[in-house]
Image (cartoon, rainbow, N blue to C red; front, side):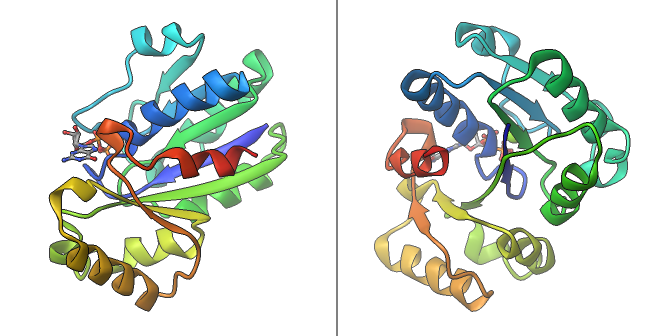
Length: 197
Ligand SMILES: Nc1nc2c(ncn2[C@@H]2O[C@H](COP(=O)(O)OP(=O)(O)O)[C@@H](O)[C@H]2O)c(=O)[nH]1
Ligand SMILES: [Mg+2]
């Protein structure tokens, strides 16, 4: 099972990215995907959308992953794997969760078997420069284990601002791939598929 973590602060577009991504993954690879959401943004993935692609969605009630991790997420992943055995599990943790904690927990947990683990971090181009200082710690935690960074909402900024966001991300110690995307229109989202090769 491929475990894909999509982290980022609230409202950056994680759910939008997941919706876009699961459609491509399902259609081009035929992978069976389960999405576990632990975040209550303004855009939920409802059962209707999921069933259209032969998928399931599992909401975790009870807020932040940091608090419910021991029971909520890990039990959910275990039950989902045992009962549905999907090819891919995509997890959307709550905005400020430290994804390393999630990764450690799923790796250490007996009863969960993961062949591949990918960590995507989504950043909001519109707000990043205003908020990075305040959220430096969760951002550093997220960037610390990122395999791919998506600078979302690229439609809201100019190229100079995009460059300055990229510089800031680099200055926070991240040196992996970065893609500027517009997830709600599916712009430049193809690179995500590299994660599923
Ligand atoms: N302008 C713009 N808005 C976007 C884009 N992607 C998502 N949004 C909007 O950003 C808001 C938050 O998106 P959501 O996926 O719920 O964020 P989450 O809290 O990280 O899951 C929604 O109103 C989306 O429609 C984008 O590429 N450009
Ligand atoms: Mg969301």
